[in-house]
Each structure stands twice: as structure tokens, then as C-alpha cells.
Image 1 (cartoon, rainbow, N blue to C red):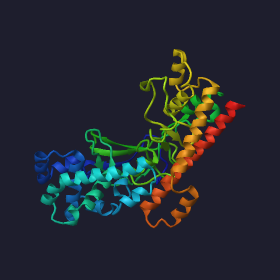
Image 2: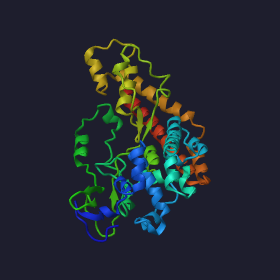
Image 3: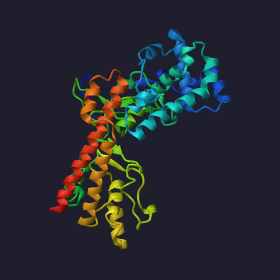
Image 4: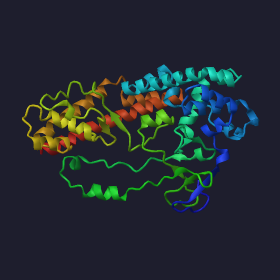
Amino acid sequence: VAQEKLRIGQVILRVPKTMLMSVETARSDPDIQIIEEQAKLHSRQVLGLHLLKECTKGKHSPWFLYLQQLPRRYTLLAHFLPEECLELQDDHAVNLCRQCRDIERKNWKQVRPYLDQLISNVKLRSFQAWLWATATLDSRTMFIEDDSAGVLTPIGDLFNYAPPPSPYLRTPEEFLGFNDDTKEKAYKSSQENNAGYGTYDAQSKQYHIITCSEYSKGDQIYLCYGKYTNLELLQFYGFMMEKNEHDQHSLSSWDLRDYCECTNIPSTHLPSTNLAVLINGCPSWNLAVLLRAQGLKHSRIPGSALEILLSGAPVSKESDALAFKLYVEICRCKLRSYPTTIEEDRELLRVAGSEKRALAISWRMHQKRMLMEGVNYGIKCLNLLLD
């Protein structure tokens, strides 16, 4: 929270290099230095070993006070138990959840011999301890140019997250080309990232937190970590946002299997990734191209029409009408595939019983709302096209 009026570009926090915990400080430990020389460990594993070893030192660690205030529990996807993963109700999300945990188990098995060498406390050598250490690194390290593992920055990691500027989300009229793009251009030119950022200053040997907007006394100061969907926020930070304009519902080839079988356009011309329903129900650019291709699959497509199609623009009202009819059915079909409705989820959320289960239920509710928005968006487009 700002204690006084702050200007744009002001350094509001300076953390000396001596307070940072990094791979560089890990290498100052002779035991870890020997291990790194002997073993093929990546920097994140080295920093994880360093963090756990410092935890064994108690008050003798220079980071004792910092370690004391770290969370004891995390809710990143890697921490979800198998039954909690299933609560996500989405194949992609469930598989990602399992993969995150499997990756950390693999990493733990790689470092386990070195944990045995460095740490006498059995609990701090366990898989649960490793999950805690890596969650600390994933959710709390700050960016530094010369090390992908980042640095743990006391005090600097206490700022809350604010997303970058919202994407421009077209209305049905704008999507269909009924309106020009002057509004979009004005929107884009007015967007600025008002959240602060962190950077290491080599000259002063300090990590700086810098503002990107003005603050009045009492205002909360936020940092921007980057652009994330809610699933990515759960994966890397263990939380999600109630209002996240960067969120989307991803559709897989399996979701589209009964709807997208274009025969007269080479598959190499059509997108196969980033097929999604955006937060306002609008189809992503790639999904729009794929659906519009279905509207032309029984027609001869001259080169100019193919270029228009691949640009994401409408080719004809007739082909667009078929595309959005398919879009509505895809969204409805995906909604029907869930074992629970939003109304049932709302009741289940009240009795979730654990934070991770509550997060999973909240996340799937957001996904279902986006699909419902997709249905409404598609119907509006159909009405505009058929008027």
C-alpha cells in the first residue's frame, strides 16, 4: 500500500543483492557447488536444494526471517491430489494437473540422492517438502535476466498481481465486419499497463520494484507478472481471478471431431492450435478460420476467397451463418459433456471442504460461463446474418 503519493517510474523498493536468494548464493555453499559440478541439475533444482538446506539452519540462516514468513501450504496444480484434479472436469486441465505433479515427482527423484547428502531432517527430504520448495520458487521468484530460475526477493514478492491491459474483445457486429475498426484502434492506443514491475539493477546491486502509474496515499500497488489464463494462474501461482479478461476456454481436436472435416482445403492451410472461446463468447481468430472453412467445404474456393478466409475475415453471409451455427452447437455440446451444471456447481462450492476443491469448482464454473457466452454470441451473430 502506498504510504505517500507516488509518481510514474518511481523506485518504491530496493532489495540489496545480499538479501536475494538465487542460484548464485546456492553456489556459495561448497556442498551445493560440488553437487552441481557432479550432477546434471538445472538451475531450478539447484535453487530448490538451496532453499531446503537453508530451512534446516534455523536462525543461523541469513534468510531466517524471510523463510519464517513463507506460506506453509500452496494450491498450485502440482499440489492437487488425483481426486482434486478430477474436480476440474476438463480433460485438458485434468491432464495438465497430473503432468505438473508427475514432473515434480521426476525432479524430486533426480535430486533425492543430493537431498540425502545435504539434509538430515527426513521431512525436508520428502516429496511433499520438494513440492513446497518448487511451489515457493514458481510462485514467488522474481525475474532476472541471467538465470531462468529467478531470484527469491524478500518483501518484493509480497505485491499482489494485476494483469496486463485487457485484449480487445469484438462485439458480434464488429466480428462480422458490420462496424469499422476505428473503435478498436482507439481502444488499443489508449491501453497502458498500469501495474508495476521488478528488475535487477547491476550498477547498484539491488532488485528494484518500479511503478508504472501514479498512486495516491492508501492505494494498493500491484505488479504485473505477465498475461495468464486462469488455468495458467493455477498452474504457476495457485490462484485464479474472478474477472480475468485474458481467460479462455480451449477446444481440442476431440471437441471439434464431429464438426470440422474440411475436405477441399489442405489441412496445412488451417490452424490446429489456439482454438478457443474467449471470455466474452467470441471465437478466437484460429477457431473462426476453422469454422468458416466448414462453411465453404462444399464450394469451389478461388484463391482470393481462400486468402480472405485465412485472414479471419468473412467470405459470405451464407458461409458465416453455417460457421456460427456450428459454433453454437460446439459450445452446447461441450456444456452437455460436463457431469454437473453451473447451478449444481454453485451448491457444491458452498460445501467444497478444501481450498483446492473450491478452486477447481470455481475454475470449471468459469469455463462453463464462457461456453454459455459462446452460445449467446453465436446466436447474436446468426440473428445479424439472417436479418
